[in-house]
Length: 127
Image (cartoon, rainbow, N blue to C red; front, top):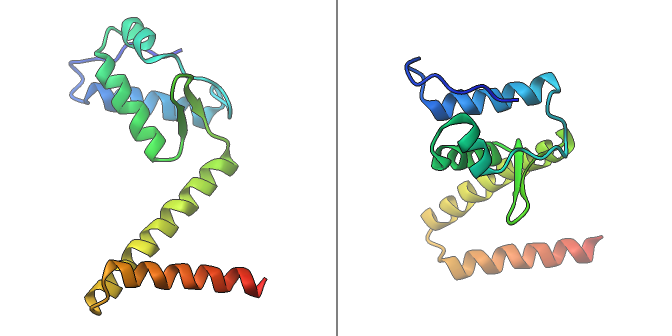
């Protein structure tokens, strides 16, 4: 399914492999739930370092395209799950910014945690 990367192309091998996986997802060659080849077997097939495959899989997981299930392998996420993952990343960024703002206002971590917990508890009661 994947072509052997060209080391003399000027494009890093991991970028070439990452783009191949991304292209396979975009064209439908890989669908939601499909399992990618194992790290060792893909590295042997493409004659590349297994650490390169690990880097590609991790980056694609961080981008929300893959899910790595330890002991089982890497799987393509559905569009719904990708959207959910992107939403979580956006929410995480908002929380990070709010925490930094509250720290700048002089609140310590304990006070910030209590504020979040109180708000969540209040939200549950309002429902």
